[in-house]
Image (cartoon, rainbow, N blue to C red; front, side, top):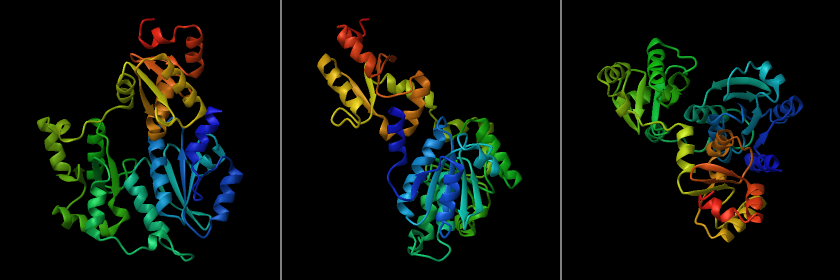
Length: 339
């Protein structure tokens, strides 16, 4: 039941955002959408970066009504993954006329957005979302450099750098655990030339933090040598640390679908009624608003369903456990941390 509800929430109800769960369904989607762009996200449910990119796809689907967005679990449909040599997730393939026309490896939201805009605007057919008046170049550049807290404009991708300088800077950022997104300047000549003027910096790669230019490879090397690199880049909070912080946010934490005011599934509604009757203060976290937490907490606590109740950072359990505690008269003392 919980799994089925998860699927409904994840898939949404947009006509141009769907799941492919078999080779036959995948081939049918390509055939039925042969006149427009189809974007296929090869993902895995256990990878938080895939969940993030699913959110990006959902937003793109709202903007690009004539592009079909397909989610395909790589390990669940191996015939398709093997055919297109999918070695890691997330990976995105772009199809037109039933043929693959482009590929993007990794969780790079700005590059995915760029490819959808560029590939989706070509070809005939009905008017597309990409046919709106062209965005002012400076506005576009500003949007790109602010697309992530740390943005690297490079030649190629982190998986396949296409020049020595880009390869070196990717390695430095990796060695120092810097979380960043990239934009491949070879994929867009307008951005490649425009950014040189916009930032008054004539070469690539270029690194931006919070929309401000830090510099190129030489500057990054200097920051490493002076020990200032860590202070220059935004601190990355690991998912594990984030989950620890959340489950300890209040002495009693309830992770549920919805919140105290409006539960969004029957199990969450039932547990709210029981918790309210216990007379103990508690806080809630809406898992529907954060896919990374929703998937990560299942693994972190080894508990596959929601809702989940924590007392002083320790998992108590879900609805069935809370019901048992209430029936045994132990719920109030457990929630107060007395047991």
